[in-house]
Each structure stands twice: as C-alpha cells, then as structure tokens.
Image (tube, rainbow, N blue to C red; front, side, top):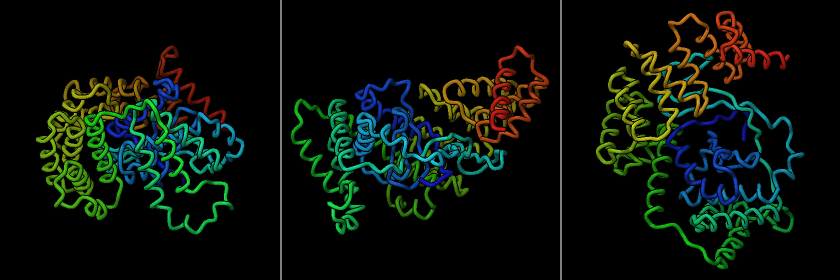
Length: 424
C-alpha cells in the first residue's frame, strides 16, 4: 500500500460491510462495539486486520471481488491470522515508517477539502488517521494454511457461505496463475494459490453440522453488494471505465446507480436526477437513493429539495452520521430561520456516533454568527483531525480567549494544545 492512501467514509458501504463481517467477528469473539471497518481507497486486491479488531478493506477488493461471500472469506482469513497469533509474531518486523498519515475521503455529498477549505467537488478529503500499513506483511506457508483453516471454521460456525472461500481463491488463481506457474513451490516459503485452493476444498469436504445461509438472505446480500460496488466504481473510477462497466444498455439497478453517480460527478445533473428517480420508483424505501438525490439537488442549488431528500433518507435509517452531516451542511447553505440551530444539533449528533473532520467544519460554519469561541473550537478540532497542528493550535488559542474556563470545549482545546507541545 502506498504511503498517503486515503480512507473512505460512506454510510451505505460501511453498513453493508459491517453486516457481512459481524457474524465472523462474533465467531472470533470480538465484541461488536470494538469491531471497526475502514475502507482504503486503493486498487489493490487486499484487506488486513490491525490490532485484532480494526478491519481495513481496499476498494480494489470490493470492486473486483465477485460475491459478498467471497468478501467474507477474505475477512475470515484475515481474522484467522489474528487468531493464529501471526500478526503479533510479526510486529517486530514492521518498520516505524509503516505508520503513515492517511487522508479520509467520504463519498456522498461531494465536497472537497483542499488546503483546509471545503468547496464543491467530488468526494470529501477530511482527516488523518495514523494507520499502520500492515497489508504488506508476508506470511509463511504454514501461517497461510492455518489462517485459511481457521477462517473456514469461522465461516462454518457463523453460518456464512463457505463456498465464498473457493470463489475468492479461484479468482486469485486467475489473477496470479500465469506468474505462479513459473514458480518452484519448493523454493518459496509463501504458499501458491493453487495449493491453498486444494487445501480449502479438502477442508470443506470434511465439514460436518454446517448449515449454509438461506437463499433469501444470499439474494439480498448479493443485490446490496452489487449496489455498493456500483457506487464505489461510480465515484472512484475514471469516467470512461464506469461507462464501459455499466453501459446504457444495462438496465439493472446497479448500472443505473453507477451512471447516476458518474453523471453527477461530471455535472450532468439532469441525467443523474432522472436515473435516481428511476431507482426510487423501483425501490421507494432505499435510503441511499434518497441520499444521492439529496447530493444532486444540493449541487444544483435546490436546497429545499435536497433537504427533503436527506430527511427522507434519515427517516429510513437507524443511524447515518454522514447523512446527518450532509443535511446539516445544506441547512447552513439555506440559512433560513432556525436552520443554524438545527445544523448544530445534527452535527453534534453525528460527532457522537462518528467523529469526522467534515462534521467539525460544518459545525464551525453553523457557529458563524456566534462570538463565544465555539466556532474557533470547531475549527481547532477540524484542523486537528486533518493533522494541521499549526492551525489547530492557533484556533485553540483563539477559542480559549473567548470560552469560559469551565466549558468542555475549553478543556478540549487544552488537549489540542498539549498535542502541539508534545510534538515540539
């Protein structure tokens, strides 16, 4: 993984991946509240687990992998490494240079943070994360076999589709087969994909008391996974490639979704809106189609319609901090009576669930008319998450000059200032 890779925030993608991973993490005895999924914007066919509970998934894996069960097999394998103790055994081999600041990119409303100043664009670059880049770890033949076997056991125990293991290894074999055919397996310590595939097929044939998921559940996950893939491809891949993957002759929901997104990216808002309206007619209870309509209407300056679409999206979801942030942003843009107060409420609610730099920026914007130090505090938090310690420090000082010393925000500014002093 290259230094400076970006993390992606998107409610739809995160919710589906979490739902797919939860049965496996529970089988691995990881408490639900500790399990976190992070999506890396990188074309590699890869995923890794850090610290036993932080799961990092590459967009290249999500856009290339064939089925949600194959995705589950990849995660099960990575959890197998954790259960086998392989990560901790290799920790001394990880260079300190592998911990790099990573920007956070959010899909959805289409804002860009460039030089610390959010403005209309495609995606949200909004933060830093000090994530250790452990995806390059090379495991031995025995470690890979153990991870495969443990991962398969997790899938069987959790009732997920063990056939996904075969699917992903067959796809990996197709990707690496030509190169591996020229390798002498006795001269390397890493197993060939064909060797792993044969082992997994043998292990599956010996499973007992295994109950596969229902056809209804499998069908639902397949549909949702195709939509997530289309969304990622629509936002992240070159325009020409999106249309190659999803030509106008393809009338599936996923194809219409990808084309609506890429048309929004390229400023063809009427075409994007027409496609999204088609999707809403087909799936009137799909919260993420309303989210996309909110994005499109915001970009065209139709704040009333945008707010209505976001509110409908939120009414269909239990938790969607990024959509709450998007709604808060549009409210600050409309700025009718009461809009700023509601934007502050939404931003604070979003921060409680998922702290994000963009949310602090929106909160600062909502505090624009105040002179009580809260806007300066929100900007201090924003720049702190971006990793800009100089600006975070400056705003924290300015905030403390206005805030009461007993205010929680005053104390938070002190924390930011202490971080600055520690780096000197």
